[in-house]
Length: 114
Image (cartoon, rainbow, N blue to C red; front, side, top):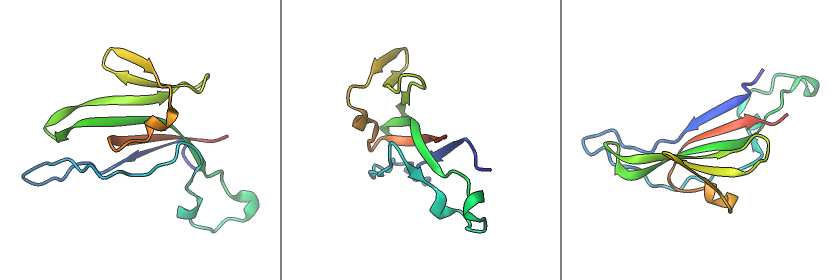
């Protein structure tokens, strides 16, 4: 069976003398991440596992290098479905869920849809 949670780490830093940050925007879905096309197709249709995942958290890094910066997280409330931004000791409601998709994303957490 497939894992209930998938964690994707985006390569955001060059590991050389500079340790510079990679600012490339990576497009990732809020819902319906289908990993089925990355799995071997050896099972019959009745045995195929559910392969759809929904985003539940995004950790972000602000700063210019591996040696400096700040981490914050967007997380989706499991009951209400509302997104919140966690920044040290403050938590703010996110009004526009599309702001969760940003070029500062570093770690994506997806939950398998039931």
